[in-house]
Image (cartoon, rainbow, N blue to C red):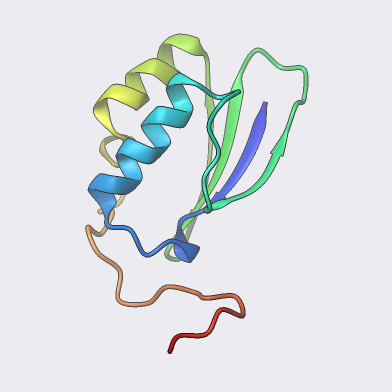
Length: 98
């Protein structure tokens, strides 16, 4: 499976984001969130995640064991950059605020 995630469109702080992605990592065929831009079944045993967060674009390929480890530990722990807890800017993609 291949999934494209754009964290820049979700206003949730990092702890919520990690729980949300963790739930997907545990149950990839039964959980989808608003930051998901694309999900494709590619026939691979690996889960490929294309993650956009801030100015970073990361591609991660996970086997089942790695997927479950990431679900438990949180994805930010495995990044080679400091993932901000909060974001000052969130893209709204046409949504308007009142």
